[in-house]
Length: 449
Image (cartoon, rainbow, N blue to C red; front, side, top):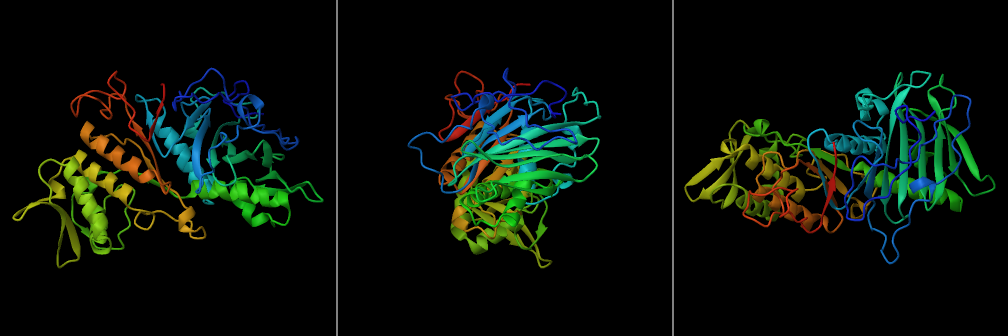
């Protein structure tokens, strides 16, 4: 059985050379074999385009110092069919409503949660809603989808593909980890009556392959560092690939600032920014106290994206332990953040996210990995929501500058008719109009409904 929505097995299409991809292609990706209950585990085979080994890094291009997700693959997932989305340091997923922008970020976040050790029900609580609406169940009433990614790093490009059964029971029924044309881990459902899958991983010692049952609600790749001794060359290869994927996926901050929750004063606390940025003033209080230079830089950025003059970002503390942020307009005038427009508040919150790190954002950092090897990925759904062209250009210029060193990556979604990159006056022209030029350092991926 293959979980491809009741259609024929898929094959992966090549990624378009211009850094863009369409979510629908005429050539589907390779099906991840999902054997019947009495079948054998998938045979070791690479998962590259059209059944060929995954392409190696181009000659002369050095390996990234820090693991990073460079490709997202979605098969029979929500509205996506055989989608291959290339990801750069700053990536914009662009398309009209219904083209699958939000669902692509949803898949990325689910992979990140699974890589951090979360259970499948926590990572994909709405899995049944992510199966294509017209997907037909197989003879046993099963439907599902496949998601995957490529993580580049010191070990080379490593591919992870996961097949999820959403109905009638939520479980991982197949997983494959490949690197350099070699399958390092493969799992398969052999007995539907048990809550385990059969796992096989590369050993290259006296026993070429090691087999063991893995739980069907956890990502096998995340379990490998706990199960592989690392005594043989093959085991070390498996460990390096698995750890690269886990490190590349784990630290993700999904951000969607909600202006209506950002206007009121908030209690002074630990200063870790929440997903909806409702405690923006609390975090600004922390940056003003602990990092005045970063706080001053944010004030300069605020002046570029907010109406009227901005001389500083001020704070007003009350005796009750509450704090309110204000835009200083001069010696005798200040505007509370609650009086700003929705676009100005979103602009400030997103700029703060780009200027800070895992210690300030509400994320779980990979404490066992040296800070120099970590990469934080920000997922911003509706990045352009409420912003004018000037604000969006300022944010993307800031993101491109910060993401250039590899410590931070940004994947955002924008709709058709955005205003970034236009040669004309600010606030005029769209992302899909003739005057558009891709901002330097930004990858734009087009999605079709």
